[in-house]
Image: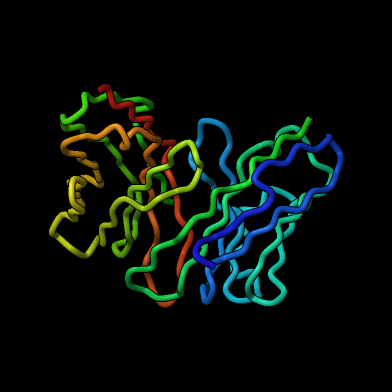
Length: 115
Length: 117
């Protein structure tokens, strides 16, 4: 596609429910990142995929958070037993894996609200 | 661990004037990249300018330029001839740059820029 696409744009869910957030990266981009941006803060790294595998998941806050990228393209961020503190904008970014000029392109994010 | 600090939560500039946004960072690495991103209300992060740490020359992109002081670990953004469309949140970010890996971005808390007509 022309850019990184994230769906849904907004998601409201009840505390304790399960949610899935989808990211469709730019075609051909093998690197994919998830970030979480809480109100008034900069984005914080969650997880990095290189192809199909999670190369770095050190930013995931706890085991309620999980992400997959089974075919090396679309990725899904999964949150179990959501809590009000999970409310944030979840941003996805993709890039080529190249040392020079490796610009990360961001989607418009999913605003998750847990009520 | 690397950190990025933006000490100006909000800034304001008159249209057509110049404004400078501050950023400092902390790292023990010698090879890295620094970025300024713009985030309008649409939420999409847009790359404004990039600086490679090994380059002494300050990066410039049209009305946007940086003052990169490696020894002081300072990376400020100057916006010249400010336009109404420049109003947004601006984030300074750091990325490691070594080997063939990409490395994730570390962001500051952002500066909200307002442009007055």
